[in-house]
Amino acid sequence: METSDSIAFPPTWSPNMVANLVFITRGDEVLLIHKKTGLGAGKINGPGGKLEAGETALDAAIREVEEELHITARDLREMGELHFDFADGLKLYCTVFLGSEFEGTPTETREAKPEWFPIADLPFERMWPDDRYWLPRMLGGSRFRAWFRFDGETMLSREVVFL
Image (cartoon, rainbow, N blue to C red; front, side, top):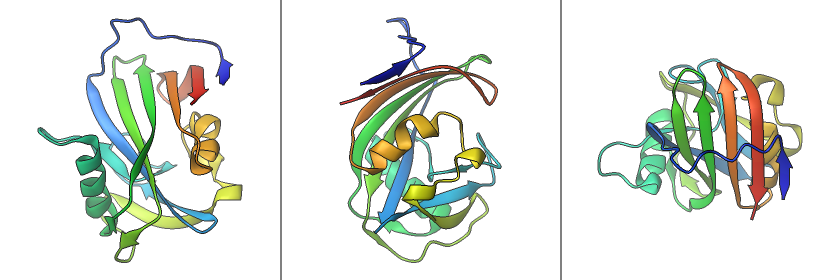
């Protein structure tokens, strides 16, 4: 277990946005996107997005990867949960998926530009600050739950538990 600045959210915490993130690996590389629109525009992240009415997290993950990269993810498995509490009132719950099988060629879209990065050299300086605390171990196969407080793009506190 890794913790820092323990911030257990109150039992009444409830998200007002539910989303997903997807990480697809190929050998010692991971497919990330240069995000062009929405929350985190300008940053590098995994593809993903909000759930639509009636969708499961997995259904939404597959749909978002298809929309953002024009590929079909085939073997996604749930690896973790991210809880984000933003000073502006956004309370985001995000399911994280990992896979290595897909059909198609990652293609730039209006929302995202794909790029393969070495897992050993992730571009943390261009990513959300929380990623360095959970992403490397998740890519190595560790399941996790994490809680973060942010004010804009500044991380105020964190707690990450590896299962």
